[in-house]
View 1 (tube, rainbow, N blue to C red):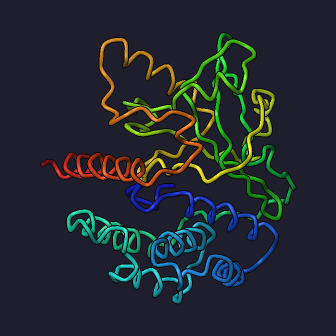
View 2: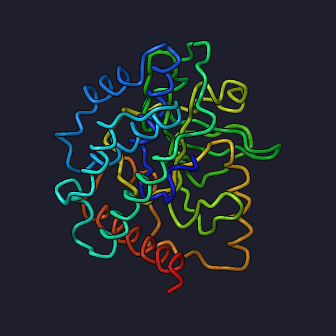
Amino acid sequence: MGAWGTGILQNDTTADIWVEFKELYNKGLSLKEIRLKLEKGYKPESDTEYYTEIWTGIAYGQWMCGDIESYTFKKLSDATNLKWQTLWTDNEKLLNSRIKAISDFNEKIKIPRSNPLKRKRVVIRQSFFKKGDIIGIRINQNFCIAAIVTSNKDFDNDGQNTIAFTDFLFKDQTTLNEVLNSNMLYLDIGGSNKYYRGFYKAIFSAKNMVKQIHKAFIIDKIEPTEFLWLGVGTPIGDWTKIEILVEEQIHFLENNKTDRPLNVSVNQFLKREDKLETVLIEWDKKIFREKLNKQNGT
Protein backbone atom coordinates (compact mmCIF):
# COMPACT_ATOMS: atom_id res chain seq x y z
CA MET A 1 0.00 0.00 0.00
CA GLY A 2 2.38 2.61 -1.20
CA ALA A 3 0.13 5.60 -0.62
CA TRP A 4 -0.12 4.95 3.08
CA GLY A 5 3.42 6.24 3.61
CA THR A 6 4.33 5.71 7.25
CA GLY A 7 2.66 2.84 9.06
CA ILE A 8 1.36 5.30 11.65
CA LEU A 9 -1.89 5.49 9.69
CA GLN A 10 -2.44 1.75 9.41
CA ASN A 11 -4.29 -0.50 11.83
CA ASP A 12 -7.13 -3.02 11.89
CA THR A 13 -9.71 -0.30 11.15
CA THR A 14 -8.07 0.92 7.94
CA ALA A 15 -7.47 -2.68 6.84
CA ASP A 16 -11.14 -3.55 7.42
CA ILE A 17 -12.33 -0.46 5.54
CA TRP A 18 -10.11 -1.27 2.57
CA VAL A 19 -11.51 -4.83 2.41
CA GLU A 20 -15.09 -3.52 2.58
CA PHE A 21 -14.35 -0.79 0.04
CA LYS A 22 -13.10 -3.29 -2.55
CA GLU A 23 -16.08 -5.55 -1.98
CA LEU A 24 -18.58 -2.74 -2.47
CA TYR A 25 -16.64 -1.50 -5.51
CA ASN A 26 -16.74 -4.92 -7.12
CA LYS A 27 -20.49 -5.07 -6.47
CA GLY A 28 -20.88 -2.03 -8.73
CA LEU A 29 -21.46 0.78 -6.22
CA SER A 30 -20.15 4.23 -7.11
CA LEU A 31 -17.34 5.71 -5.04
CA LYS A 32 -19.74 8.15 -3.41
CA GLU A 33 -22.19 5.36 -2.59
CA ILE A 34 -19.37 3.40 -0.98
CA ARG A 35 -18.29 6.41 1.06
CA LEU A 36 -21.85 6.99 2.29
CA LYS A 37 -22.23 3.33 3.26
CA LEU A 38 -18.91 3.26 5.15
CA GLU A 39 -19.68 6.57 6.85
CA LYS A 40 -22.98 5.17 8.06
CA GLY A 41 -21.34 1.98 9.30
CA TYR A 42 -18.26 3.41 11.02
CA LYS A 43 -19.70 6.76 12.20
CA PRO A 44 -16.41 8.73 12.13
CA GLU A 45 -17.97 11.92 13.48
CA SER A 46 -18.63 10.19 16.80
CA ASP A 47 -15.31 8.34 17.01
CA THR A 48 -12.59 10.64 18.33
CA GLU A 49 -10.01 7.85 18.56
CA TYR A 50 -10.35 6.36 15.06
CA TYR A 51 -11.69 9.28 13.01
CA THR A 52 -8.37 9.52 11.17
CA GLU A 53 -8.14 5.81 10.40
CA ILE A 54 -11.70 5.76 9.08
CA TRP A 55 -11.14 8.68 6.72
CA THR A 56 -7.70 7.55 5.55
CA GLY A 57 -9.26 4.17 4.76
CA ILE A 58 -12.07 5.74 2.74
CA ALA A 59 -9.70 8.17 1.00
CA TYR A 60 -7.28 5.38 0.14
CA GLY A 61 -10.11 3.32 -1.34
CA GLN A 62 -11.33 6.18 -3.52
CA TRP A 63 -7.76 6.93 -4.63
CA MET A 64 -7.11 3.29 -5.52
CA CYS A 65 -10.32 3.19 -7.53
CA GLY A 66 -9.64 6.36 -9.50
CA ASP A 67 -11.35 9.40 -7.96
CA ILE A 68 -11.45 11.12 -4.58
CA GLU A 69 -14.36 13.36 -3.67
CA SER A 70 -13.62 16.87 -2.45
CA TYR A 71 -15.80 15.97 0.55
CA THR A 72 -13.38 13.16 1.45
CA PHE A 73 -10.37 15.47 1.10
CA LYS A 74 -12.06 17.95 3.43
CA LYS A 75 -12.70 15.29 6.09
CA LEU A 76 -9.11 14.05 5.83
CA SER A 77 -7.79 17.59 6.25
CA ASP A 78 -9.99 17.99 9.33
CA ALA A 79 -8.26 14.92 10.80
CA THR A 80 -5.31 17.05 11.90
CA ASN A 81 -7.59 18.81 14.40
CA LEU A 82 -6.59 17.90 17.96
CA LYS A 83 -10.13 16.73 18.80
CA TRP A 84 -9.49 13.73 16.55
CA GLN A 85 -6.05 12.94 18.02
CA THR A 86 -6.94 12.07 21.60
CA LEU A 87 -4.74 8.96 21.63
CA TRP A 88 -1.65 11.01 20.77
CA THR A 89 -1.95 14.27 22.71
CA ASP A 90 0.06 13.05 25.69
CA ASN A 91 3.27 13.13 23.64
CA GLU A 92 3.99 16.22 21.55
CA LYS A 93 6.60 14.54 19.36
CA LEU A 94 4.35 11.63 18.50
CA LEU A 95 1.45 14.01 17.91
CA ASN A 96 3.50 16.12 15.49
CA SER A 97 4.63 13.00 13.63
CA ARG A 98 1.04 11.84 13.45
CA ILE A 99 -0.17 15.14 12.00
CA LYS A 100 2.70 15.18 9.50
CA ALA A 101 1.83 11.65 8.39
CA ILE A 102 -1.78 12.70 7.77
CA SER A 103 -0.67 15.76 5.80
CA ASP A 104 1.84 13.75 3.76
CA PHE A 105 -0.79 11.13 2.98
CA ASN A 106 -3.20 13.87 1.89
CA GLU A 107 -0.60 15.28 -0.49
CA LYS A 108 0.25 11.88 -1.98
CA ILE A 109 -3.30 11.01 -2.89
CA LYS A 110 -3.83 14.36 -4.61
CA ILE A 111 -1.85 12.83 -7.47
CA PRO A 112 -4.31 10.58 -9.38
CA ARG A 113 -3.39 6.93 -9.58
CA SER A 114 -2.15 6.00 -13.05
CA ASN A 115 -3.83 2.59 -13.06
CA PRO A 116 -7.06 2.61 -11.03
CA LEU A 117 -8.40 -0.76 -9.93
CA LYS A 118 -10.80 -2.48 -12.28
CA ARG A 119 -13.92 -4.07 -10.93
CA LYS A 120 -13.68 -7.84 -10.50
CA ARG A 121 -16.26 -10.56 -10.67
CA VAL A 122 -17.64 -11.15 -7.21
CA VAL A 123 -16.86 -14.54 -5.64
CA ILE A 124 -18.43 -15.09 -2.23
CA ARG A 125 -16.12 -16.59 0.40
CA GLN A 126 -16.96 -16.33 4.09
CA SER A 127 -14.52 -16.49 7.00
CA PHE A 128 -13.16 -19.96 7.68
CA PHE A 129 -12.97 -19.63 11.48
CA LYS A 130 -14.94 -18.12 14.37
CA LYS A 131 -13.79 -15.92 17.23
CA GLY A 132 -12.43 -18.16 19.95
CA ASP A 133 -11.15 -20.92 17.66
CA ILE A 134 -7.71 -22.20 18.62
CA ILE A 135 -6.05 -23.18 15.38
CA GLY A 136 -2.85 -24.70 14.10
CA ILE A 137 -1.08 -23.64 10.92
CA ARG A 138 1.53 -25.84 9.28
CA ILE A 139 4.59 -23.68 8.65
CA ASN A 140 6.96 -26.34 7.24
CA GLN A 141 7.41 -30.11 7.02
CA ASN A 142 8.40 -30.36 10.67
CA PHE A 143 6.21 -27.99 12.64
CA CYS A 144 2.86 -26.31 13.07
CA ILE A 145 2.30 -23.14 15.09
CA ALA A 146 -0.69 -22.47 17.36
CA ALA A 147 -2.74 -19.28 17.03
CA ILE A 148 -5.90 -17.73 18.46
CA VAL A 149 -8.72 -16.37 16.30
CA THR A 150 -9.65 -13.01 17.82
CA SER A 151 -12.31 -11.94 15.33
CA ASN A 152 -14.33 -13.07 12.37
CA LYS A 153 -16.02 -10.66 10.00
CA ASP A 154 -18.14 -11.58 7.02
CA PHE A 155 -18.61 -8.84 4.49
CA ASP A 156 -20.93 -9.12 1.52
CA ASN A 157 -18.65 -11.41 -0.45
CA ASP A 158 -15.51 -12.00 1.59
CA GLY A 159 -14.76 -13.16 5.10
CA GLN A 160 -11.85 -12.20 7.30
CA ASN A 161 -10.25 -13.48 10.47
CA THR A 162 -7.71 -11.77 12.69
CA ILE A 163 -5.38 -14.18 14.42
CA ALA A 164 -2.83 -13.70 17.20
CA PHE A 165 0.10 -16.11 17.15
CA THR A 166 1.54 -18.00 20.08
CA ASP A 167 5.16 -19.13 20.27
CA PHE A 168 4.08 -22.78 20.58
CA LEU A 169 5.39 -25.10 17.88
CA PHE A 170 4.24 -28.70 17.66
CA LYS A 171 4.72 -31.63 15.33
CA ASP A 172 1.27 -32.76 14.17
CA GLN A 173 -1.20 -32.71 17.05
CA THR A 174 -1.55 -30.88 20.34
CA THR A 175 -4.09 -30.08 23.05
CA LEU A 176 -5.77 -26.93 24.29
CA ASN A 177 -3.90 -27.14 27.61
CA GLU A 178 -0.54 -27.15 25.84
CA VAL A 179 -1.53 -24.03 23.91
CA LEU A 180 -2.82 -22.31 27.07
CA ASN A 181 0.52 -22.92 28.78
CA SER A 182 2.51 -21.18 26.03
CA ASN A 183 3.28 -17.49 25.44
CA MET A 184 2.23 -15.06 22.76
CA LEU A 185 4.69 -14.77 19.88
CA TYR A 186 7.06 -11.82 20.07
CA LEU A 187 9.29 -10.82 17.15
CA ASP A 188 12.58 -9.06 17.92
CA ILE A 189 13.72 -8.36 14.36
CA GLY A 190 12.18 -7.52 11.05
CA GLY A 191 14.27 -9.32 8.49
CA SER A 192 12.95 -8.92 4.95
CA ASN A 193 9.36 -8.50 6.13
CA LYS A 194 9.88 -5.53 8.49
CA TYR A 195 7.63 -6.89 11.25
CA TYR A 196 9.62 -6.49 14.42
CA ARG A 197 9.69 -5.75 18.14
CA GLY A 198 6.11 -6.56 18.81
CA PHE A 199 3.56 -9.30 19.45
CA TYR A 200 2.48 -10.56 16.06
CA LYS A 201 -1.01 -10.89 14.66
CA ALA A 202 -2.21 -11.32 11.11
CA ILE A 203 -5.16 -10.78 8.84
CA PHE A 204 -6.65 -14.06 7.62
CA SER A 205 -8.61 -13.13 4.48
CA ALA A 206 -10.81 -15.91 3.12
CA LYS A 207 -10.18 -14.78 -0.43
CA ASN A 208 -6.41 -14.66 -0.01
CA MET A 209 -6.11 -17.92 1.90
CA VAL A 210 -8.37 -20.13 -0.15
CA LYS A 211 -5.39 -21.90 -1.76
CA GLN A 212 -3.63 -22.22 1.61
CA ILE A 213 -6.51 -23.26 3.85
CA HIS A 214 -5.33 -26.88 3.83
CA LYS A 215 -2.44 -25.73 6.08
CA ALA A 216 -4.80 -24.55 8.84
CA PHE A 217 -6.97 -26.62 11.19
CA ILE A 218 -8.93 -26.26 14.42
CA ILE A 219 -7.27 -27.55 17.60
CA ASP A 220 -10.08 -26.63 19.97
CA LYS A 221 -12.46 -23.81 20.86
CA ILE A 222 -12.76 -21.43 23.79
CA GLU A 223 -15.60 -19.19 24.87
CA PRO A 224 -14.95 -15.83 23.13
CA THR A 225 -13.72 -13.17 25.55
CA GLU A 226 -12.35 -9.65 25.46
CA PHE A 227 -8.75 -10.32 24.51
CA LEU A 228 -5.81 -8.40 25.95
CA TRP A 229 -4.84 -5.39 23.84
CA LEU A 230 -1.22 -6.11 22.90
CA GLY A 231 -0.53 -2.49 22.01
CA VAL A 232 -1.03 0.19 19.38
CA GLY A 233 2.14 -0.82 17.56
CA THR A 234 1.39 -4.53 17.28
CA PRO A 235 2.59 -5.60 13.84
CA ILE A 236 -0.19 -6.67 11.52
CA GLY A 237 0.90 -8.86 8.66
CA ASP A 238 0.27 -11.65 6.23
CA TRP A 239 -0.30 -15.02 7.90
CA THR A 240 1.51 -16.80 5.05
CA LYS A 241 4.80 -15.15 6.09
CA ILE A 242 4.79 -16.77 9.52
CA GLU A 243 7.27 -19.50 8.56
CA ILE A 244 9.93 -16.95 7.61
CA LEU A 245 9.24 -14.82 10.68
CA VAL A 246 9.51 -17.75 13.08
CA GLU A 247 12.79 -18.85 11.51
CA GLU A 248 14.18 -15.32 11.79
CA GLN A 249 13.20 -15.15 15.46
CA ILE A 250 14.75 -18.55 16.24
CA HIS A 251 18.04 -17.57 14.58
CA PHE A 252 18.02 -14.22 16.39
CA LEU A 253 17.64 -15.86 19.81
CA GLU A 254 20.55 -18.21 19.16
CA ASN A 255 22.99 -15.33 19.71
CA ASN A 256 20.90 -12.54 21.19
CA LYS A 257 18.60 -11.80 24.09
CA THR A 258 15.08 -10.70 23.43
CA ASP A 259 14.26 -7.10 24.32
CA ARG A 260 10.55 -7.67 24.91
CA PRO A 261 9.43 -5.92 28.10
CA LEU A 262 7.80 -9.07 29.50
CA ASN A 263 6.34 -12.40 28.47
CA VAL A 264 2.63 -12.41 27.79
CA SER A 265 1.14 -15.83 28.38
CA VAL A 266 -1.81 -17.13 26.42
CA ASN A 267 -3.85 -17.15 29.62
CA GLN A 268 -3.04 -13.45 30.15
CA PHE A 269 -4.00 -12.71 26.55
CA LEU A 270 -7.39 -14.33 27.09
CA LYS A 271 -8.21 -11.97 29.96
CA ARG A 272 -7.90 -8.18 29.76
CA GLU A 273 -5.91 -6.44 32.48
CA ASP A 274 -5.55 -2.65 32.49
CA LYS A 275 -2.21 -2.63 34.30
CA LEU A 276 -0.61 -5.03 31.82
CA GLU A 277 -2.10 -3.17 28.85
CA THR A 278 -0.59 0.08 30.16
CA VAL A 279 2.88 -1.50 30.23
CA LEU A 280 2.47 -2.79 26.66
CA ILE A 281 1.22 0.57 25.37
CA GLU A 282 4.17 2.41 26.93
CA TRP A 283 6.53 -0.13 25.36
CA ASP A 284 4.99 0.47 21.94
CA LYS A 285 5.38 4.22 22.33
CA LYS A 286 9.05 3.76 23.22
CA ILE A 287 9.65 1.60 20.14
CA PHE A 288 7.77 4.06 17.95
CA ARG A 289 9.92 6.96 19.17
CA GLU A 290 13.05 4.97 18.36
CA LYS A 291 11.76 4.32 14.84
CA LEU A 292 11.05 8.00 14.33
CA ASN A 293 14.50 8.96 15.59
CA LYS A 294 16.11 6.49 13.20
CA GLN A 295 14.05 7.79 10.27
CA ASN A 296 14.98 11.36 11.15
CA GLY A 297 18.66 10.47 11.61
CA THR A 298 18.71 11.50 15.27
